Image (tube, rainbow, N blue to C red; front, side, top):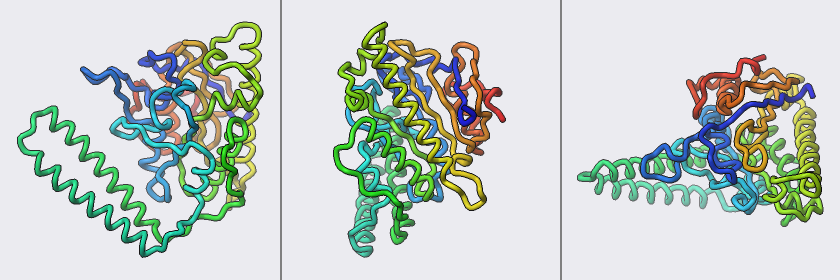
Length: 347
């Protein structure tokens, strides 16, 4: 219990879609903020952190996910992460993909990879030249769209520059066997947690999000009830299924914390001491979007752990993210709809 803090009372005030548990969880965005548009998002808290913490690692951030996320109640998005333009960031949807992305060395010769990067840069330069040619004479709406396009190109340039920086640096070796294809549910989550620990331990990245499976977890527990039906629980099978799911997720999370604590750093501290972890959802239960369940753990953000904090109703969830960002040394003025830091979390 001393390793985490449970926070109640947090809410994303703009949340209005009861089947989107992840879309705005880390952003706090108002989906109708742009006139005439039915969907809008903003940068997620992990990506605010990645802009600072990801400069010196091979991967600025890693997004982990699972198949069928929308059907499982996560809502739109390719992962939990959204970039500064509010665009979804792709995730790695199974442990095998994540393992190879993080730890498998390239089989292609270095010279060939260098040539491919040069070719990508040439294509990018040609695209920019064409875009600038049509820039003159556009109205404001089209100019805004083109500016968004240019930002996307700049993001690609940044990724290419990082690829070049790490081109001849071998990936770290880890004591993990290549995952078997087809892992799902409980086993999938457990292995993803192992990959998270290994990625942080080897400093492959310092920012990771994981959008977890729901339906396959229930199947792996021999629960026949659908994920959506389970969330509308009443006394009986639905409640029992929900409780079994909760116990399993809690056990897996406890295992992750134990693994982080078991990794010893050169100064005698543990990886847990240098990690800031948030676990939760934008949906409480059924269709209720207030009092979002939130667990915070790890010593990386200098939060006060071992607490059960009950905040005033409708405290912005983004206040928790702002508090974590400040604890990580990232002095953002605000995040999403934040109104300030959560003083009860400050150590």
